[in-house]
Image (cartoon, rainbow over all chains, first blue to last red; front, side, top):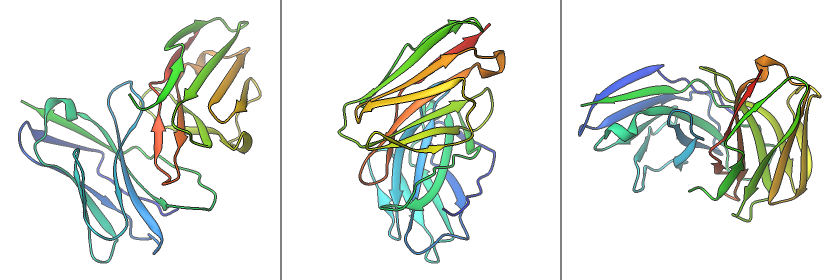
Length: 112
Length: 111
């Protein structure tokens, strides 16, 4: 699975959009981009994933560049409860041996 | 609620004790994982089970012994642990779309 690079920390004002970037320049054509987040002392929570097209669900939007070498997770209206560590992972979506690797992620702090 | 439960949520044990962590998933998944997360460190993969068979052991010391009696249950048996084994132990299951669902974790303190 391709390696990802994320900024160690970011902050955002409550009510504003939080845009979390992720670089995955070695991504393969069949690798998906997954995002998870971990609120302090809890288990990680799945947010969203995508292959090529932009995706949106009730939690967030995922924007993947045309060359697929980077992506951005967007929390459209951040709340204090969105303060967490956000992990970007790339991997094959089906088949193969899956050894997931969670790096250090981005620590997002949403302030009032 | 993710459909993955872990018990106990907190555990304090001495270095000579034997204890077990339990994970149960109600999602019909066939793959389950144990992770360790020490303070301010990334998640470390410990074990992976697919269809009850262990497929990965990430060089975990033998004082940690996993057991997977069926696809819904996963145990981590602990014996003669060290203080540095104090951590948050997380269980996860994996669905057909490769999305992982994590339990709330067991906070372990070894004295």
